[in-house]
Image (cartoon, rainbow, N blue to C red; front, side, top):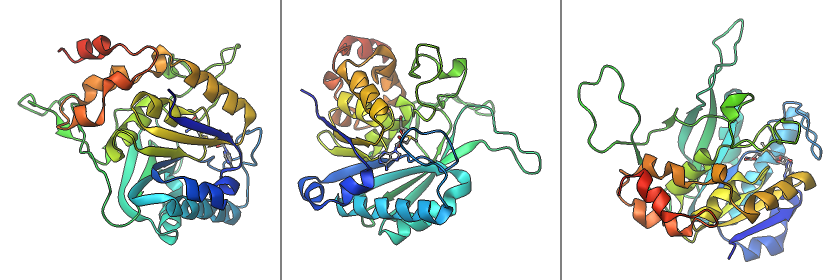
Length: 295
Ligand SMILES: C[S@@+](CC[C@H](N)C(=O)[O-])C[C@H]1O[C@@H](n2cnc3c(N)ncnc32)[C@H](O)[C@@H]1O
């Protein structure tokens, strides 16, 4: 049985409508809006005057705050040059900042001629109230830095610098996970990696919680939530993207499977409580994940 709702709409219109407000209680929101950098979107003007764009973002943050459970979380992703606007937006709409996550995307830096090349994006993690309702301290096991003398026995706690998740950029690095058109071009240039959403959902939800993505794009949030026993609501304005999301969710492909990441988190103390691998639909092979982490 599917646990998601997918709505083709303008998210601001929908979230500010009172009926929607009454019916839902959101535990986590992933906010990955268009960055207003004049990219080609079929149903969206990506070149709004800056003040209009940020007013809209503040409004979205405010509406989401209203429908979020106490202690619920938001992860707002943006370009690093917009950090001050993101922080302002969150503060003005009532959110309390917990971390400014640096996502160093494992790709080459964007070269700049008169300043340092750009190598990361920000993800502001904030909560409704000062204490998160859920925060699972994930442990990962990154390769040992060359100056370390001893192997780690059981990984390390994840910090606010995420440098182990590759962006789905152009070219071969995007691999199988990037959805492509028949001519080989990527279907959606801003498709987020499965690994990123998995990390966010694992950190800030429990099984059975509800995750919202107001700018769902290709539906990565829903695809992950569906495999890990969380309910999800995706809103996307563009009909082609909505079709793509439906397709992705109809049967989860191998490249969308979260099971390959299970081994990355095996040192997390409460992993079995927050990730029941029996939830994984379609290609769900518990054995596959078990083999991966050597049980
Ligand atoms: C940066 S992309 C999100 C990508 C997504 N994280 C993924 O994994 O595919 C932003 C998306 O927001 C959609 N969008 C733009 N304005 C919107 C609005 N007002 N309401 C809902 N969706 C909107 C765009 O069509 C675009 O697909």
